[in-house]
Amino acid sequence: MPPHADKHAAELHQDATDKVASDSVPLHRRVALLSVIAIVLLVAFSVGNTISPVWIIQDVVVNSNEIEDLSSAVALEDSGVAESDIQKHQQEQTTPEPLSRLVYRATSSGEREYIRRSAVPHYGIWSLFPAIVAIVSCWVFREPLTSLLLGTISGAFILGQIDVLDQILLPSMATVKSAGILVLYLWLLGGLLGIWACTGTAQVFAEWVSRTFVKGPRSAKLVAWCLGILFFQGGTISTVIVGTAVRPISDNQKISHEELSYIVDSTASPIACLIAFNAWPGYIQALIFVPGIAYLATEQDRIQFFFAALPLSFYAIFAVLGTFLLAIDCAPLLGKRFRVAIQRARATGQLDGTDAKPLSFVGHDAPKVAPHYQPHPLDFCLPIVLLTMVAVGSFYWTGTPQVRWAFALALVVAGSIALLRGMSLHDLMSGVGSGLQSVVFASVILMLAVTLGDLTQKIGGGAFLVDLLGDAVPYWALPGMLFLITIGIAFSTGTSWGTFAVAFPLAMPLALALATSHGLSNESLYLSVCFACVLNGSVFGDQCSPISDTTVLSAMTSGADLMDHVLTQIVPASTAALLALACWTTTVFLFC
Image (cartoon, rainbow, N blue to C red; front, side, top):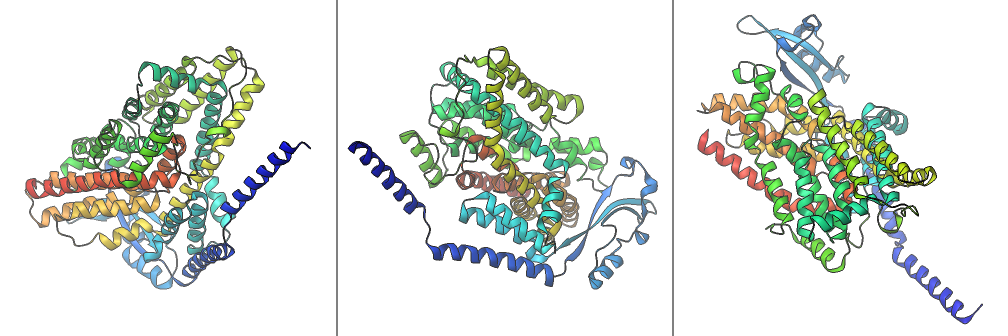
């Protein structure tokens, strides 16, 4: 072997040795880590075997005109979920049957009042244990898969379900929700990303936009912000479309993945609050019926109330405004971590931190463009335009945005264009396969996040927080309390819609009771403020939670490390939340 070859081999060996040494972790730290995990699981197992759940009653008053079959309702005293029945089950440590039922009871005027009564368990402070374990683990380990799995297992143990695979994971994976995640985010999104990568259309589009509209990082971020406003359906559709379309452009302009993920995340649900031509009003109106209130009597009344309260969504307003200021490089409060990320990307072109673990493929892991294929910007634009038209148009046509239809059409059109323009079927399928591989890890994280959210609701995390903090507060403090409670619920469970279901049926009657007892002069405004606090608190908590599907998707489509995204957006998002809280409190003091 030539001398220079020996020298090269020695250098490679030294590099490998240095890498192993740098990556190695002392044995005592590994033992400590495993011991902590064992203790966490042992604590959860002990709770499940020693602590019985506390059963509480949640009532949602139902308008009789909206009940399809009144004969399905039974008298409260015969329902099995009366107060005496729940107390008996509590004493005997048994589970009420059924857990939820449509009942009726007589009012003071002799009329029937229909109620959807549910018996909800919680384990006290231990109801928050799985979510706390997952969140703290995310911060400590900086590895979401292990953290979510540890939280899921601890939640299963508290429920007394030791066979986590058969009792928790398999039933969760067999649901329509999980199947939808696999179809949309693994097959459709992964396949579409793979086609765009192997054809090079995303890069060509980015170059075309850069030449036409983008003159630097500021204009690139403005493009991302405008797209976030355009896709006002919110949630997953906004994060996926905006992150996927803008990332090639932002990468070329040295925009850190922390910046892009914050813009994507903060123009998803907040925009859905403000431009609510989506599925939100129809879902939420069913949760805010309060008997005896004329402006909440019918479905149409409640939808009108929803839209009338939108100007009070101060957090959503400040969140969207904050991302605009970030886009034009005028954001006043970002925090040290965020500013370091911006300076790092601009100065060195390093889009992620040195210890970052992005959720999607980057750099050398991305598939190469197939040889002899000449991409065109329209190859990227046409599928995106069709995707948007189907998603938004299906909402106006069916009342629900058909996201999977939209992505399936975009995938078929993108593949067809590639074949018609000369790409071989083998190269196309190779690109699709690479795209699927690139999102497998993130899809597993999404499924675990959904599973953990469902577990936290079963254990009663949200019910415990409301039961603990929802009693006897001054009228001026209730909006702030509702905001903080819903932040805690959404942050712990990773779901805004699940928080709506828990908080709205309790918050609206409580707000009415306080408004009446204190003789407030503007009752409807007070209820609107409390409504906005629940709505915005749920959105804020969901946006900042590392176990939220939209948080994971924002990091995934932007190519960011999950915890880098969570920790950098905490400061600007919290600033918007504090400003919103001040506005709500001022509104109640001055106008109610």
